[in-house]
Amino acid sequence: MRKQFVILSTVFILFALEIQSQAASPLELVQTIPMPAITGHFDHFAVDLKGHRLFVATEDYKTVEVIDVRTGKLIHSIPRVGRPHTVFYRPDLNEIFVTDGDDGSLKIFNGNTYDLTKTVKLLADADGIAYDPATHYLYIENGGKAVHADYSLISIVDTNTGEHVGDIRLEGNEFEVLRLEKSSPKLFIDNREKNRVDVIDREKRTELTNWPITRGTVAVAMAMDEANHRLFVGCRSGDIVVFDSASGREITSVRITKGIDDMVYDPSTKRIYTAASDGAVDVYEQVDPDHYQSIGKISTSPGAKTALLVPELKRYFVAAPQHGNTQAQILVYKVE
Image (cartoon, rainbow, N blue to C red):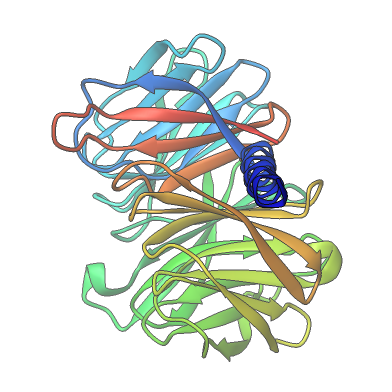
């Protein structure tokens, strides 16, 4: 009888742990939006909350796809964008801003008609952006090895006027993503060539300092916990490196799926989400500013490395490119 009791108790405990594990999953797949016409890689995208629109950059297909987030239906396809990298939507102007890495430009589209209204000429491989809501300036990384130069630029565009108002020169030929600190003039950018974080004063338009990355390689993603002065740097080696954004000290690092391209920190839940081309999303929870614990690894799809968290909708959108006989799609997850 005692042996049977032990066996039943063990089974019950294992069952309870399994139920707890399922209940604790930080993401639940609730919808897939098919995109059968799209081939090649996706890149970064944006959302229009009021208009219920998702703007998806199809990097190789050369369009920005506009999707109704309520129905999952395609509303419009913005054509003839050479290599769309990043999309920014400004709701008060109802304008869509797209970096085009092919011709090195920022393209501005009317949010009603989707007509191209202006092209701001930059250098080739215009890619990552950061938006300052206080000045309405858009900071755009461009140049570098795409133009056979040993330096790159952060170009500044006034989104009120669509005018190119200045540049910040950086030493290095390969950069990826920018993050802006709202409480200070600091702008952070990953320097892939030199494996470090460059810190910029966006008011003086000069580099303040730089911080070597010793706990990971190939930095391509960033997120910020501004309240606790933490900068998260995502590396394709399979690491998130946590910096003190005030001092530049490396605090810690945690392991993630290799091939990261997107990362976001949600201050309301104190969670970090990363999307990687090896086909998984990793979710970490902040125990305190110096400690982080994994609360889930969710399988997605090969090459699904770009994503967008929309806290207002409690949704996390992951772009999964076509592979084999599986068509391209947007995976829509409910955020716990």
